[in-house]
Length: 144
Image (cartoon, rainbow, N blue to C red; front, side, top):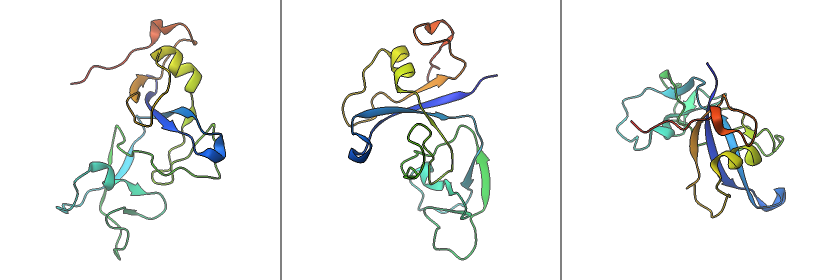
């Protein structure tokens, strides 16, 4: 079985040349999350345990670590990237996952140029893919 990917269309910061990039994040790795019954949670992505802390963003100032459980697919939005990481292999400062810059390959499959500041081109994709230009083994899962 191959890797399931989350393709994230993002704007690059000016210090990295600006423009847009599509990061491919493995979406089938278990992700630690806060299993608290805290009613303050409104977004399940807030429950992601910040790497190295044992706490989620909502409970970062608590004395005790969060009760942890694991989920797949991961729900971290990968909003904070390590500025010291290689841009071709971004690392999320929250969940610790390392992605890859797959802009050319994935946009060839999607046939959609990255444009605009939103995430309208974000997608899920089976990672067992054919070479660029041969979408025969690529698939996009249907919503359930």
